[in-house]
Length: 120
Image (cartoon, rainbow, N blue to C red; front, side, top):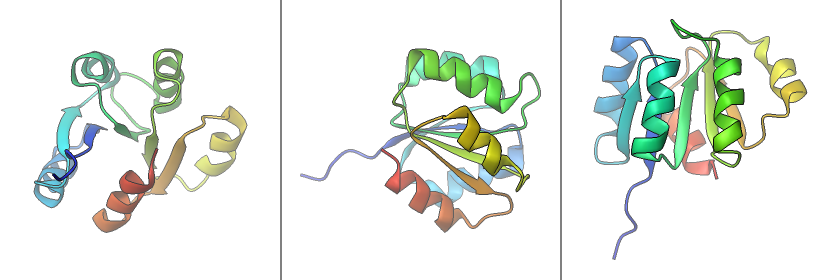
């Protein structure tokens, strides 16, 4: 029997990127989306993802702040951070946000799939 697909919560406010994720990962993952931090916190409890894909720039919150809040309730949840800023690396190291990987935009969706599959 095949294992059930990983549940991935994408926290991303760009509709075009959400659409790309849906098309590329259809059938590979069970997916849910949150366009902002408030919705991400709601979806964390009702969807219970295996992996979180988190954009650092959100309309209602800073991604780092959101990740710190998530860590309070889900300290071991694997997170793949997506950012347009190469300068994030030192910040990721300093914050000790364990179980995290990050990708700098633009990235290939196959790179994101490899990061999701390797997480956790």
